Amino acid sequence: MRKILFILCAVTGALLFSGCESPKGWKTVDGVIVFDTPERAPGQQSVLGLRTAPMETVRVGFIGLGMRGPGAVSRFTHLEGVEIKALCDLYPERVEGAQKILADRGLPAAESYSGEEGWKELCERDDIDLVYIATPWQKHVPMAVYAMEHGKHVAVEVPAATSLDECWQLVNTAERTQRHCMMLENCVYDFFELTTLNMAQQGLFGDILHVEGSYIHDLAEFWDYYQGNWRLDFNQKHRGDVYATHGLGPACQLLNIHRGDRMKTLVAMDTKSINGRKLAEAKMNTSEFANADLTMTMISTENGRTILLEHDVYTPRPYSRMYQVTGTDGFANKYPIEGYAFRPTQLSDEVPDHENLSAHSFVPEEVKAQLMERYKDPIVADIEEKAREVGGHGGMDFIMDYRLIYCLRNGLPLDQDVYDAAEWSCIGSLSAMSLEHNNAPVAVPDFTRGDWQKIDGYEHAMVGD
Image (cartoon, rainbow, N blue to C red; front, side, top):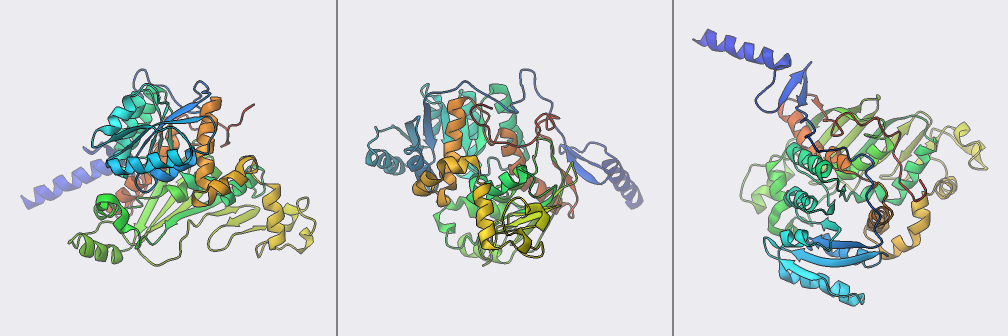
């Protein structure tokens, strides 16, 4: 009997690793874990490059007025062509706090919603064009899907989804309803990132080979501020890089992901949990903690580039999103020191003192300043002063909101589409799969279903394009 069981197990394993379907929606092909890709249902159409009718005024409803929501409401009061029509939170006192933001700016009160089902009433209104969601992660997809099904465009905080199934829900709903679904990844709008992206698009780095990004942020001072302990509870239950988008978003734009290239395969590794487990013992009365103190994920792309991601919210490492770009002719680095390095010949027409440059070190500060001014992104040149004045992580949050409204008002494709939301959010599930299968390689799903080559390069859409 023991021999028969051994043979059955061996045969099952051989079938699994030869590409036979498993009952879990995935299979292994040549040692790589591959998830099933659902067929595009009848009536669905790609939303790659989606344009919708221009809007003179974008009417907005906000759901979630805890940590991030009030700042978004405040920023929107500084945008032209916006009407704030409704405000919603689980707690009515938070709604009243957001109403005060409107009153202080001399704006009319919005309709108030609260309680467990208030967000549904907001989504059902016929005088809202955009639903802005800033709730705990677990609520993002149900709310975004419901809003799109009621004809609304959606902007949803990061990560947009917490599982592979949720990623497909967002994609399929956006394709079925032909509504925008933008993840509110603010780090792609930081000034250094925008300038570096413009440099890359102008060829200053040559061919980009490797990009790094991370979320390294000791959250010791913040855990108690997440209502109901939702964030620590999520981390306690989930292994992998559960918060990858701040580092991954800028990397994907640099590499033209689903705009000429695509993420192909990832492999993840992690440390044991020490500080995370101590948190769980102190705050949750449990010694079980799935999320590692440090998680690393390496990703390869179809065109032979690589991405390195790190996640660490438990150790006293200084804040870092890493943001590093390695090209054949240039290099950029943001943390802990901002700098650029180029071959001297690469800058021969860019700065007057190029003879003093060496690729073995960062360019001098005055050269860096000249480059950042010369390659300042047109978006930054247009809105920088106001963005710094209004603020939101130094101004990048305001640029994000400004671009969202600009594109909707002008009927342009958004800077981030639903495929970005799915690709950047799925890393949590895929890295966990790799870790749980002895660091096995995992294929990244093609959420565009083969359309990733139809757009030649990432760009910010502008009027006149």
